[in-house]
Length: 425
Image: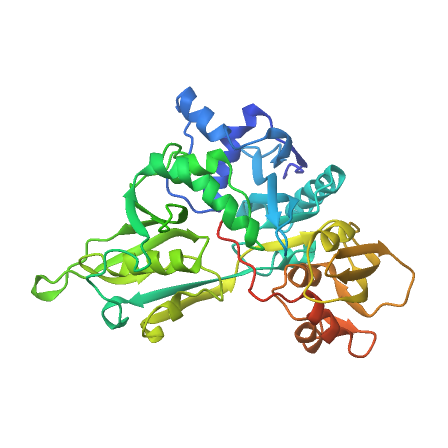
């Protein structure tokens, strides 16, 4: 006789963490145990540092050998809206259900618990970076930013391989992890203030990015380089690794893999890419995750030397407060739009009148007839400016209730440059 299973979703306790981490290892197919049974106290402390038990959920099966069978975690985040205002976000990560416990509503229960708490806290949006596309739309998330990766064939790029410094008097310097921890946070804060879709980085993020915190994983020390303007201002930072590939005839064929490159000016961006393409022995540069409209290909004399290898959705956003979200951003023009937002989750649905102009925006609930009807998941990419209402209408995902409303929405909501999230979390 099979014992009936009782599946409970609840916040974890400190005692639950080892089993919770073991489940996380299993669902993300990691081959090393992040926290074995014989782990030292300092290892446990390192693994616990990013985990707030009150915002860390587990599903528990009282009949299983290890009771924890699903994981879910969130943490506070700041997301940059169009125009530079940062809104409070509920960042969701570490989501997984063991294959032995699928199709039992565990993710739905954990998600409902977390989003309700985020709404109660006053978060404007929730965010996540999904590993699979079809999962999160049913919870009201929509793909709000995209990412691209290029592979640059250096010999055909047209760049001078003997280049060593920017022509405008700026300078490139190789630095170490300590320098990155000192200089990086301020530079990134300047970038995200001007980049819709960017998120903040904690002190823990910078320590993990420079190997001070490793969470039980192997570490390879990367290279770092900074770019300063002629006046001495820090304007760019890149982190990268190199392989050790040699071809026939003992010719080096080294590939640079960029981990992160941030720049606050086009000049610094150009200089850092030129630096990477001028390193001795390097024949190929992989760009890492970049904005879908990144300047990189056109910074090369021969843009065809940069081959697009990835173009995909990146940051998914779930609107929790329509009024605050629409009032937080700026708009390209002036106009009034009535949106009917359909939200099966019951968190942000309703009819909203948006009045937008150069001096800001005002949004409030209304009983007026709508101009557009759309799901909350389709509002997210419109809100960050990465999607066209007319395009969504053609796809049948936005219903135009007044002729010309989709074009007017595009005139208000679209941005001159596409949003981009440099980070995975």
